[in-house]
Image (cartoon, rainbow over all chains, first blue to last red):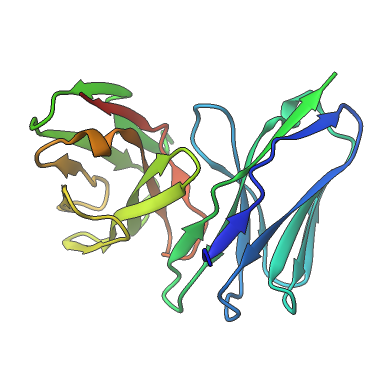
Length: 110
Length: 112
């Protein structure tokens, strides 16, 4: 089993709709998590950090389920500009080694 | 602040050639790292550094060397390029190893 797994998508979402997708991780000791956003042919940029049960930033909500070892990202009222690949990042050892998921592609359509 | 800068943006090499990818940051971050990104595989750590003079191997270090003589610079050297090293290379920096990573714009490398 991969340390971090994501559904590659693409998730095709009408503008204004809600989309959610998950990221599963194998290290039960992981304490903090990150969602990065990567636009086509660009570098990843931090979207949000998740340190406890979840985090909310505007239209974006991340939730953590430690028992089932997954984190989810929900995007409400999707905008065309939300089209991107969303990378899940999980520290996989006590030294903070980061493991990146392969990403989930979201395509928001007019 | 320029953040993290990388040069070149694009590079084509022939098998067996060597080259150095440059990375610099102006945020006074101690931790710097090099990743490669291949389709469907996510970012994989090549080498990292926790401060000037200290480097260590990541997940896929073979064929690459690094050095860290200053806090700002962290060059990645390809010793003898192979087609398997065709990839997009990202340099990143952060305050600490598990902290928010700030990425450079990437170098797209093709090895023929």
